[in-house]
Image (cartoon, rainbow, N blue to C red; front, side):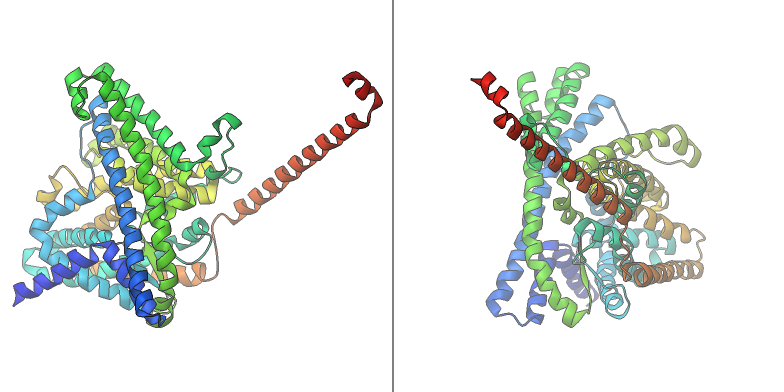
Length: 518
């Protein structure tokens, strides 16, 4: 009976909640039913929302596939050795031992989230299914290490409570910055690297008060094609790929270099690098189209959820949802985040590692693209180009140091694996929960973990009521300053055009000028 029940929970958790397209399609359909739409509209709207997210996922797969060879290339030419944070890899390893426990945590945690969204001011429905699974696995691992294998029921109860809490409090803390990014209050961010996005937005406020947006870069007439974000992204990645490809041809034996792209010779190797860069541009374009498609269905349908099921609720969505609000900022943040990761790697190697015994965390291309790109968008929203660069850089440091700290509380088995969880919230939340269990006393551990959850709820509740609900949006002074500068620039340009027309008119009526022309 127990195995049968576990199988049902695993099916719900891993085959439905773990697939964001299914979850978003179901939520869209529920919203349309609540709005009393026809059966055809419910089916069509639910399917289109699911298809839009599948399109986004297809684009993400193209991006990941194009970044993996670049990551190998960078490691080969630089000789870096260490741990590569990969959420999917550590989850696959941990699921063998903690899969059943995490399924209970996931399903019950989703219920806790709905109850908190229904009965508190934290009206956020977390819809990033794979991140729910990642966090449930993380909590199952850390709590099992702390409480022991004999107290799995306690792991499930505490884990479900903490999972439900983190899924409503993080969208609340990030929401003022999210409103600055999107320009409205319709969606929230539901991605467990939120600490990095908040840090990027906050840093952007400090460094970019007079910095123009990444989306308003002025190109010379001959380079006007770079205004197309897909073209600009592909060309930028092409340059990055070519730098490392040429570097590889210089420092690596030919056979070792050619093996990275399965190339037969140097020419094929260079052209393979260029093709990977172009594929990256294609992937980003697919992501942007997928976001527009599913948002077009989900946001109107979610009004039904907001009106009938969880009053005032907002969908908390995956990080690519912000990419269309700053396509150039995504590239700025990605590159800056990778650089920040390299700097943090050096800091761990020469200082933090010897002092605290931290593992070397290598900068993985995939986490730096998605979280760094998101940080670039948040930083750009509050601080323009400077905010995108510095915000991305700060994110890179965060997602390098926090995973190293997390490995200290992951237990002897998983702590020895050559991978770990890669995003910011897994790092700080997992480390905090794991540290609270170091006493080895179950009662003390229960008290501390419950207190952590309650403190987070209280802090998010106060932040929601006193900050979010009162309409505070970060970067307001910069927005006013940039509006004034743009008005001045527009006025100056208008005056220059008027002066040019006046000069032309005077020349056309000047007899001397006419005689000279004749």
